[in-house]
Amino acid sequence: IHFKCSGSIKPPPSIEESHVDPHSGVHFQEVTATISRDLVYEYFGKLPFKCECHAWSPRGKAVSQPASIIVACKYSWEKREGVEENH
Image (cartoon, rainbow, N blue to C red):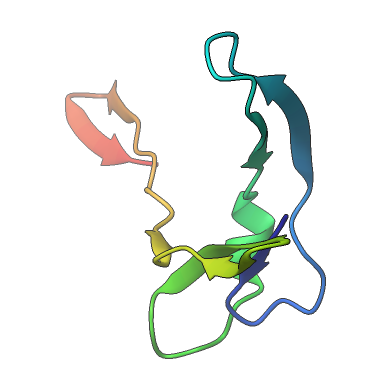
């Protein structure tokens, strides 16, 4: 299981966990990717930055629907001499 993201050659850092369903005995993997602000900023494409999961099993390959990632802006407002300033 790995993630593939827009414009990135290597997959993002991820954490993989193995689980077994106690009722069915089915083994499954859970993988969480960490998408950093820097990874998104390095992307220069026209479309939104997206990541998708690629997984393989003896039954075949599966690819998730892409997830779009948008970096939110952080603003702080300060009052100085009666004037609000955006930082």
